Image 1 (cartoon, rainbow, N blue to C red):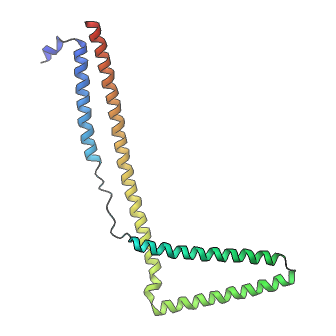
Image 2: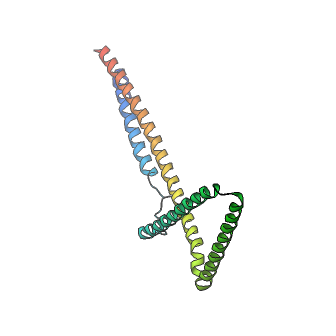
Image 3: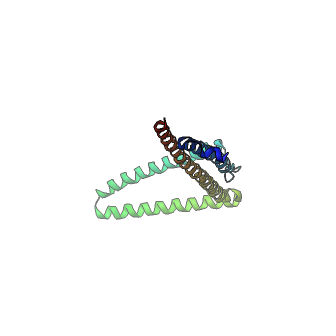
Length: 183
């Protein structure tokens, strides 16, 4: 076979080289893609909250946000009213607001104590939810990293494939040019 190749024109040899290179690159890409596309680092998380739990949590957070927005609006209105009052009145109002805030804090503390005494599980529920949320976040980050690595590998394979195809096209064009000169 090698002796018959020596007798062939250069254009034939270039065509053969381009075809062989294309075939090798295609096989290498398929093998590499099949090996790199397995997402072994991505595992479905079984501890993810259900959609109903997410909706309930979202509703609770929205209600809390609306309450905070109403409180902020109230505080801003109070500040505008206080700015227009004489200094002695401002001190009296500040004292009243401080006393009111202290009463609210005492009430909240009493409610928290009642919850802890009545149902200690509820008191621990927030820390457990926070830990679960951190676990979900860590799982999602690792999954994202695994997907990113896989995308980077496929991108690298694509670059090599395009470079090989460009080389094959150049070889074929050159061989066609040589064949035209031979005829």
